[in-house]
Every structure is written in structure tokens, then in C-alpha cells.
Length: 364
Length: 211
Image 1 (tube, rainbow over the protein chains, first blue to last red):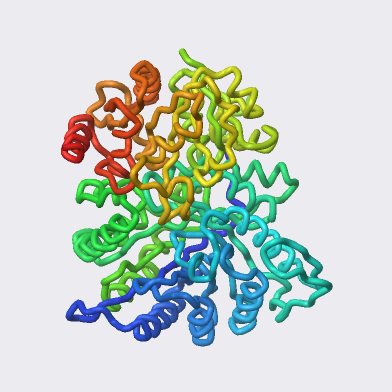
Image 2: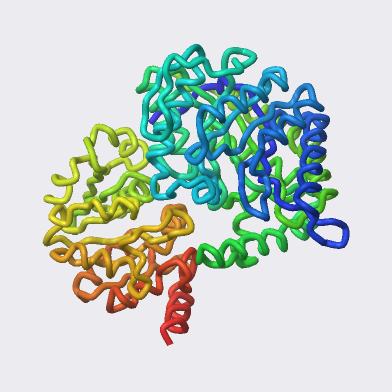
């Protein structure tokens, strides 16, 4: 295993959200419609405070009413000029790759070439019964649809045949993207085959790290690099998606985030039958060996710098928001992430890079 | 030390293979097809584990760890592991993996159903209740105050001991249950699924539920 030399890719800092229903000042849930309008404001603010990317994860539940993320992203695109917009993730297995391509190339047009797609399953399984798919077919669906999506991105009329949708014969799929294509990532939660698949199609790798030590994923970065090499491809970016929450102080961040986290995860543990998190397990997760990036701007910046360094990654997407948080807390989170966390991570990583270059090199 | 074959190179297979290699075992790893397809995964994620054809890996192994996606089990050939000690780390978890007709009989645990299919093998249920990242990160040497417990359940007490010894060398205390039926306590919805417990806590949780 070789150590990677200087990072060839610029640092990118994004925000991802599943569009959790926000609560009002009296802690009452807002309507889905108001939650979505709030989300547009969040995206606009993210642009204003210098964040590079704003992503929305497709979900189909009352807690996360973001079933048409691309429509919301288009609204954000129309009110911004700089920030990139994309899915985080698109559940391609239960969608039609042709429609996904059409929707995101339309978003690409509206945004002036700022659209991206992250493909994956995420934690969203609700789309399978909704659209008549069997979860057990997930891998086969994902494999074939990813292959078709990669073909579509090459541009030009397409001829394709498979088992999961109607054949295409010399079909021009429109609109054509602004710059011929748009960036595509594959979100990976722990499947090495997905890492190989991303490398095979020349898609970038987005590591979704939602529990345990981020450093544990370092072999996945290495696997991706070696797989790209074995397919004769040039290196590609590696990103990290992890949950978190930023507030003015560590105490405030904890106080805002923990009860909401407990509530949401408890609800899921009832459905899925796993253990309810304890305060102890939560404190472990926000510590140096856990996946949650929660705290003051300084705390979160230090942790992000550590995460990126340990994985040799050049992109970090903070998955912010947790059901029940207020719009005000979310807006503060976004503002602090843009104005304090990101500049501080850049500073920390710049320092590390300088120190690394200044270290004496032993030759011979 | 028993030789180990890990069947499956998905989420948990390479993690298990690495853990076993680091515990000093001779380990081979196999997927459903040509080992060349998993050579890179084995080299990077489980260095020291030898990628082989499934039949060859099993033939030379004393213990076979079955770490395939559970929805592939219906098509798994029982003859492949006939006469072997099989460690079942799979979970039947419909909210995440979808419904599987053969595992829908909720009066029985998934490993009881696996044992019924693999009639000529001895099936032991263990390690299923840990997430694969816990399996990777929570291994600790014997005597460490942070060492976690893992349940080992099976109908054959000698086989339970063989597997429990492997689990302990990998880095966990064990709590042994004397039937696959009792192993249902390790499944989703049970008291230890996804929990990170020390031995005394694990015993307490299991006993409370069994009572």
C-alpha cells in the first residue's frame, strides 16, 4: 500500500439535508409545504455564506417530505449564482435513469452548469414499495441502472437494452447538459463492491459515514484509488458525508441536537429493531472516534480536518438538520458552517500541508 | 487453530476476514464467482486473506463463515458446506433488506431456518447483532475494560465452544447459549441487536428477555 502524495483536488465543502420537518418556536411541526419553503431559504443562505455545494437526499416519508429534491434544487438554483446543487442521494434503483438524467440536466440548465448527482440508496428504502420495486432486487437494479446512467452521461444518441426498463434505440435524451456532462458521485455506506463500481464507471466516491470512526473508511479510499488505477483511469475525488450540527458553543450544539437525535433515532430503532442510543453512545459518536460532527465552529472544524486527513478525502458534506430543530437553529448552523467552520478547516489543512512539506525528507 | 473460509465479500465478509487474519488464523475469502473479481478487495480490505473459489476455500476449511446477503441464501447450495461447521452471521432484517419468503416464519429464528436448509452442516449463530463497523472497531484484547460481548448460540455444545474460541481470539468476550432457538435473542428487535454491551450487561439483557 503506498501513501498518496499531494492532493490533486481542491477542497470542497458542502451541506446535505434530508429536509427533516422543522418545528416552530412553540416546538410544533411545520407543514410539509412550509418545511420545503424553509429549505429553499437554507439553500440561498448557504450560497451567500460561501458554501460550495447544497445537496438534498431523496426521501418519501412524513418526516422527510423531500420526494422531489430536484424541484427544490431548481428553486435554489434560480435564486443563486455560485453554489453547486445536487442530490444526496438519488435512489437510482427505484427511479428511471432516463428521467433522472433529464431532471438533473434540466437543473444543470437552470443553474448554469452547477448540477451534480450522487447515486446510492442512502437510508431511504421507502421508494421501493412506493414505485413497485422489491428491495431484495436492490443490487441488480442499481448495477444495471448505473450502467445506463453512465451511458447517458456520455452524450449523443443512445442505444441500450436491459431488464429494468424499455430499450432505447438511437435515442437522443434531452436536454443536453450545459458543459456536455455533470459530475456524478456514488454514495457508499460500506459495500466494497460499490467502491469498485464507482471506479469502473469513472464516478467519484462519496463515503457516507454515519456511525463509528471515520478513519475506518481509509481502506475504502485506498481501494478506490487502486481500483481506478486497475481500470486505467485517472485519480478522482473522494468525499465524505457525515451528520452534524454547529452552534455558537459546544454546550448549545449538544443541547439543541441531542434530544432531536435521540427522538429520531429512537423512532427508527422501533421500526428496525436496533438498540436505542444512550447518552454514552452519543458522546462517543461526537468524540474523536465517532461519526457525528457536533459542536462549536472550532470543535467541528477540528473534527472535519481530522476526518479529511485520515481518509485522504478532498470534500466534506455536513449532513445538517434533524427532525424537530427550528428554522432559526438551522440557519445559524449554516451561517456558522460557512463563515467560521469552512475557513478554519482550510486553515488547519493548509497548516498541515505546509508542515508536511517542510518536514525534512530522508533520501537514500 | 482451525482454518477459516469466509463466504461473501460484501459489507461484512472482508471485515470478518481481516479480524480473523489479525487474530492469527489462516483465512480464505470467496464470493460467488471468480476469485480474481475480489482480489483487489481482499488485498486492500483484508490483507493476508487468500481469495479463492468458494468450493476450494470450503474444502480446506474447518470453519465456514457465511456472510452472504440473506436474500442470496435461497440459491445457496447446501452441498457446498456439507459436513462443515458453519457460522451464520446473517440477519433477516426486512425493513432494510426486503421480505424473504423462506424467512417469514417468525416463530423460528433465521439461523434455525438456515440450519434446516443446511441439514448436513452444524450451524452456529454469532456476530450478527454487531454492526460491521462495531465488529471492526470494538475488538479488544482479553481483560480490556472496554471489551464487548458477543453472543454465540448453537445446538452442538462442542461447535459452540470452537466458534466462541474464535470470537474471543478476534477480540470479544462471549456469552454462550445452548440452542439456535435461544439465538433468536440476538436478532433485530431483541435486547442486544446493535447494542454495545459488556459481558455482564449482555448476560443481564439476554436473561431478562428469556425470563
